[in-house]
Image 1 (cartoon, rainbow, N blue to C red):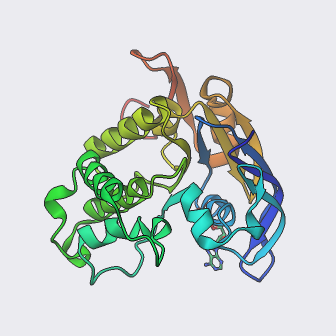
Image 2 (cartoon, rainbow, N blue to C red):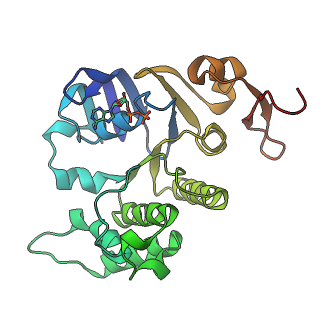
Length: 263
Ligand code: ADP
């Protein structure tokens, strides 16, 4: 059964649909990246997939259940989200933000247990945020904040992880580390991952399936080997690139064709 299934989903912000007719299915253990230009609808797709948008048409199911029939807590037990834009959490410490990941676990009758404390510790360890625990979010760099949001998502202990351009504020060493961590979480069977990403090389190196959006619609879907081609990148991104196989992995990667030196 699909963990997440979008069937003919259209969504927007009350002024016409921004994404249209999206059908996408994620089976358990998959790692899928959504690629497309700025404004192509990647964030909107991720928001609609977890019921954040009101202006929607079509179906979304989580583990076979209709998303729109589920409460927020039920959804939060299945899906964790790493947003692209910082939420207004600046007055909180990093440790407090990670604890927010336990929201779905708490009820009035049952407080937090040892499992929850362990999940928080592990999430902060994996994201190297333990040393930041006492610091206010306002005082962290963009990359540090991003890692705290990832720790919060891991502390939530959901089967499905949605990430909105997680590499955006990270320098290259953290980009590689983050995607390495996501890959490990996928491979040890803990997570199914859907990430919006603008970095084609990072996505092609880690996701098994790439979904390309253009003007709010899926225009191409397939493995990196099937989809990362110069003519595809030209058509979808309007950029001239060379595509070659990575020397170590054999996976396709792009390099920009620039008008600079050597031309
Ligand atoms: P991407 O993530 O691919 O950059 P987005 O989903 O953020 O694309 O944006 C797609 C379109 O939706 C853009 O035209 C953008 O202006 C619009 N949009 C995004 N967020 C909002 C919002 N909160 N309210 C209204 N329009 C929005």
